[in-house]
Length: 64
Image (cartoon, rainbow, N blue to C red; front, side):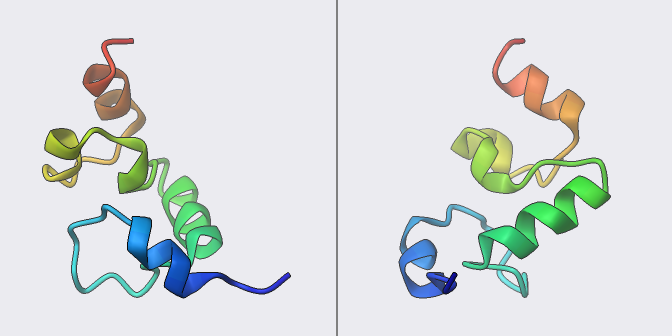
C-alpha cells in the first residue's frame, strides 16, 4: 500500500508545524496511541489548537 502523503496533507488540520508525521497518518496514529493520545485530526479545531491530545481532552471536546 502506498502512502498518500500529499493527499493527506491537504486534509491534515494539525497546527503543530514541526511535526515529522504530518501527512503520514499511519505513523501519526501509531505515535499518538503509544503516548495514550489521539491525533489532532480527531479534535474540533479549537480543541486541536490546545495541543492536549489526551483521551480526556477528546471526551471533553465532544462532550462525551
